[in-house]
Image (cartoon, rainbow, N blue to C red; front, top):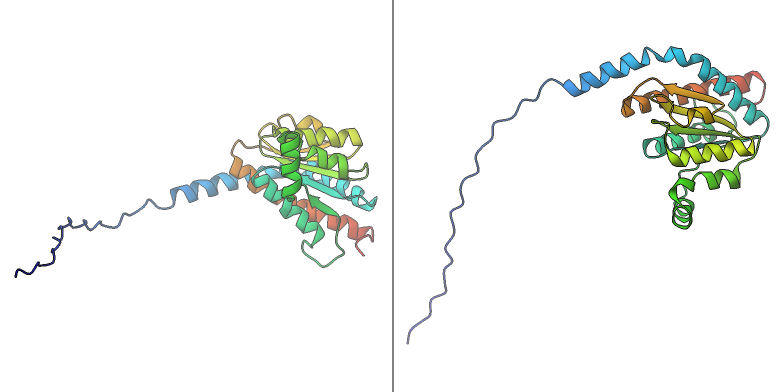
Length: 219
C-alpha cells in the first residue's frame, strides 16, 4: 500500500531588495524661498495701514450699533473666516464680552441645500439676505478677488446697506469695487496672500477691541 506523500510547495527565491543609501536632500530650499517671499511681502504691508484702520473704524461702528460681523470665503479663506469669527465671539487677547460675529461657511445643511436647490454661487448671498441687516458688516475673503459666491454675497450686502470689507489679493479682482473698504494684498502667490490675510485679520481684531474699549463698549 503506497502512502501519498503531502505535496511540498517549492519556495521561490525572491530577489534580495537592494539596500538604498539614504538620500541627502538640499538644505530646505523650499522653506527658505517661502520665508524670503513671506518677509518681502510683509515688508510692504505698512502700505495697507490706512485701509486696515479704515476697515477697523467701519466694523467697530457696526458692532457699536448692535450689529454683527459676517465672514465668508472658500477653501483656506473659509478657514480664515471661521478663525476670525471665533476671535470675536471668543476672545482675541484680553478677556471681554463676546462680540457678534459668524462665519457663513460652517453650516453644511445650509451650504448643501442652497448649492443643490439654487447654485453654489448663491451659498453666501442667500445667507446674507436672510441674516444680514443694514447695521451689520460683511467681510469677504478671496485671494483672487474673483470668487463668484463672494461676489454675489457682496452684491447682496450692498443692496441691503451692509458695510462691506474685502480681504483680497492680486489686483482686487471683481470684489474690490464692491467693497466699502477693499484691503488688497500686493502679491500673486495664494499662500503668501493667505498669510497676510490672517495677519490683517488679527490687526483688525486688535484695533476693533481697542476702539470699543476706548468707547467703554466692551463691558
